[in-house]
Length: 157
Image 1 (cartoon, rainbow, N blue to C red):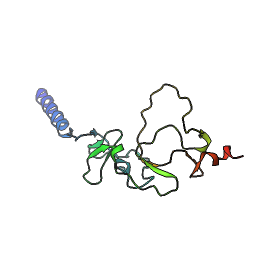
Image 2 (spheres, helix red, strand yellow):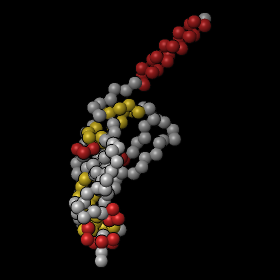
Image 3 (cartoon, one colour):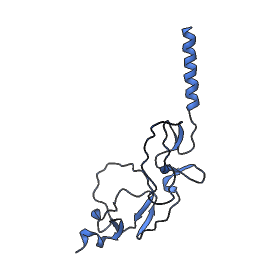
Image 4 (cartoon, rainbow, N blue to C red):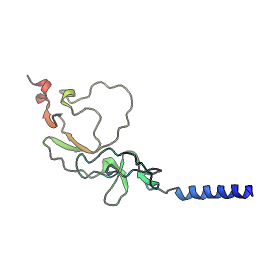
């Protein structure tokens, strides 16, 4: 009798695990406790990305886009974030950046005359691509406005 119960339990566990396995598409991975976030999709406008908390209660496992890929709203497939359709940047001296560089920063306080980066160590950073409106080359952000280098407070004479 014990052997029968043990075999039945094994069959139950195997069939349950088989039912949970997902077949995901290109650029997708299975996620056991998925959070449904607007940032899963290519953004349609600036500042659409918001932090997404883990759910308190897990739903059914599902396929989610891999790191640095987003789901399109048209056909719901995952594509590299850099391939998301650009959105319009309305603020003066800004432009769309699908995957803005970590350096140079946009901050006037870190501005350099040539727009270059300070010396960085040799560590490799795997930065998440977050499409956004960024200051055009030669402009730096101060009080949420993009100013030429000469107008950054530390450069005014």
